[in-house]
Length: 333
Image 1 (cartoon, rainbow, N blue to C red):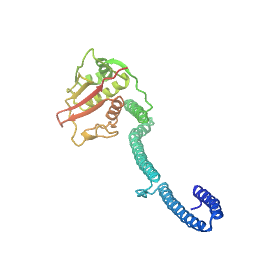
Image 2 (image 1 turned 180 degrees about the vertical axis):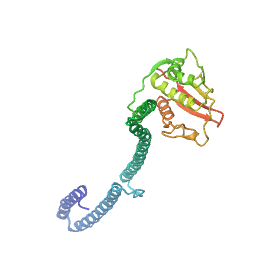
Image 3 (image 1 turned 120 degrees about the vertical axis):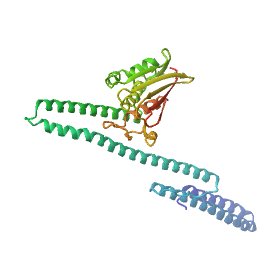
Image 4 (image 1 turned 30 degrees about the vertical axis):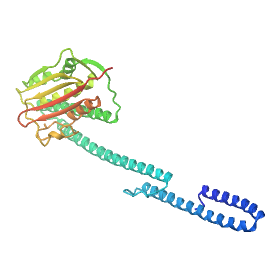
């Protein structure tokens, strides 16, 4: 108990004051000195008792913190009645609760990172294996020229796929880390949609698919034109890939008060009800996913829109196509 310097110095001061006062009382009256001595002893006992009780409670709190630091969880923090110790107890409880929450978040981040690395490894393993096999075949000097040309094109296609995948993963990692800075520039909705569709028009034409665009000509909004167009493009590309040849994709836009809404619809196979809640999850591949799908386009689109205070939802019925609802909220520069 006397390891507590405050208690030790307080006791020494109390004794010194008692000796001085006792000497003064003794010089006046011996009978009064005995009364003083009794009160002094009682006061000393009360002082030491209160100090000891306080020291035990502080020790209990210190022991609790030691257990927490050693990794023990779900501990009941000791109850204290005193005002200042009660405040300290509450602060410690808040700190411990916050530490537990952060520990849980870190554990989830570790699991997420492990899952992501596993998914990335899986996505890269398939094209790399294919490249190695085709490269070994190309080493055969007796391989016909037409087969050599066929394998060369296949290798080029796989390399393009890997390049897109790595670029997408890099973008997703920047989004997760918050290192991707979004610009705020005014752009007309029509120009934004045209920018998103620019590289999809030829593939849709080759598939015989029709495209209908009905958006406000002169209405504009403030966003990052490049990344917002990328998000819209990923959604339209998903619709195109799940719509058969001769099908159609439509984009309709309208201004609704504080946001502009885009409806992107297709006449494709639709999304299975079991897959619908998960289609925006990274690396998720539904029942109708294509063999080359990696499940990252829709996840990236949702992340880009969310980072700009936008939203995207999906509705679908199997065999009746899908509808994606984008809400781009209006902001000012």
